[in-house]
Structures are given as structure tokens and as C-alpha cells.
Length: 145
Image (cartoon, rainbow, N blue to C red):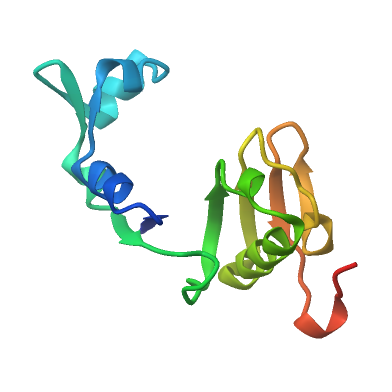
């Protein structure tokens, strides 16, 4: 099955680091030795993500709040973003995520993220992991309260 990963951020520095795929030992300390061996190559005292994995990724600067959204995505992972946004911006983000996902798409939130207004557009699959699925809806049959 073909896989393409869109890795986006507002920070050019973060995108450049991710694109290089080079991490210090302490940055990969929570990755199992099996995964390190499978997906990384040891490079001096650092680990580099293998090219076959990096080639699956498209790294791009992207402002979720103002740039046009991607579309027809199978899964979105949103980690450590929503906690910095007020209710109005969270509404906008959840609407954008819902638009971007395929009808059977999934949204994975970070452990610090709140579902907030998500139940309007997403059904919770695994509560502890904040794993959600997009509800089939149209813009005309929901309103934010």
C-alpha cells in the first residue's frame, strides 16, 4: 500500500531538522532497540532516519490556521498544538481537520490535548489515546455552540 506522510510545522527550523532526520541519542531514548535498528542508521553518536522512511515524507511549512488545508487524508496526528489555542481557534482547527480527512479518516490527539469541541465532528474510538474518527456530516448540519 503506498504511503505518503505530510510533516508540517510553522517553524522552518523544526522542518529543517525533521527533513535531515538526524537525532541525538537522548532524542531517541524512548524508541525500542528493534525500531532503532529497523528505521535508523547509527551515525557517529547520532541516529539518522533511514532514507526509505524519509522518502515517504513531504516536509512543508504550513500554517493550519491560514493556509489552505490538505484534503483526502487518511489520518491526522495533532500533538501539542491545541493546548495553545483558545476555543475559537480550536473550533477552526477541528473544522479544518474534518474537512481534510476522508469520510473514514482518523484524528489522533496528543495526551495533553482536549477533545473540546471535537464531538460535534468526531467520534471517540479510544478514549485514553484520544483516537477519533471523522463523523460523516456536511457543513450545513452542524453548528458550534
